[in-house]
Length: 143
Image 1 (spheres, helix red, strand yellow):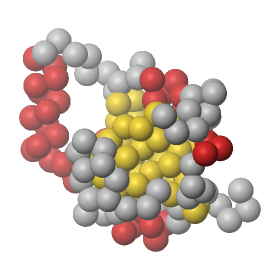
Image 2 (cartoon, rainbow, N blue to C red):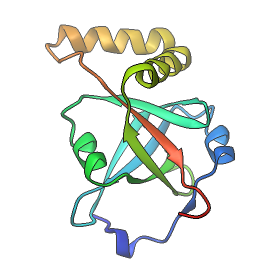
Image 3 (tube, rainbow, N blue to C red):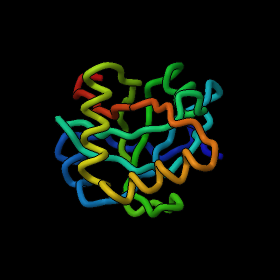
Image 4 (cartoon, rainbow, N blue to C red):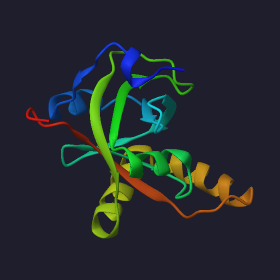
């Protein structure tokens, strides 16, 4: 496991970095435990309004970690989480209301039928369909 202190320091993400990720299918998202240990997860994502969006279950560990620490690193990756590029620092937070609807629309536009089939398979398998939508944002120059 990697901790915050022993990582090579990634540079701050910019809106241009997010735009450059556009055609990638997955990003490797690192959220951080209170101890500073990184927890990597490959996620589907979509761009929108200068941010990246993804969804997960509302009780997922990454949601709990993000509520405690908004700092994340992201990198383009394979579906199994093998990085395909350099990591970038960003921040993330859970969305609600119209922002969650914007995230859903962006994810649907990018993944369409493929995502719909996955959601149907998950619901048939007894998994909850309740979703938490997360926005990842660039870190401002002064942060």
